[in-house]
Length: 130
Image 1 (tube, rainbow, N blue to C red):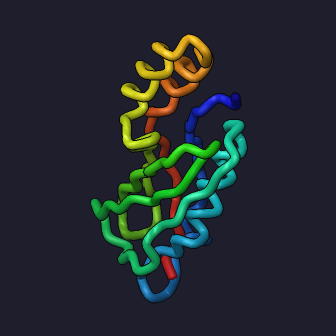
Image 2: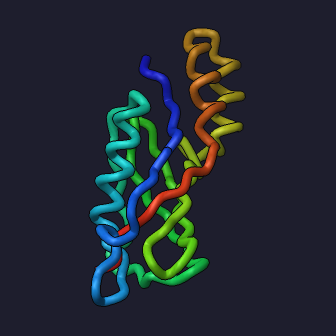
């Protein structure tokens, strides 16, 4: 079983993720998240809302699957220029900590506990505006 970890170390320039209509290009953000999933040994992707205004303090969730587990990634906009913080919110409906505890109890997959425990760290990056 591949480890279920998500440490999104996203450091991007704001310009490519920001468009002229002051909307985030969430399709580009989806690609960035998918790339980060892959870098962390996970096969998966997410879908983000399509009509998100670039707004400091704005938040939204992207949902999808990673290694056949349902995931939700929370995105918080740091400013109106597309800079965001991304945090793994849930794995199969549990917080990363709850998932790690449940995985630790599953002696058949002890590596899942350590992997999930490292998944809750927020990361910062940029999302495009349309």
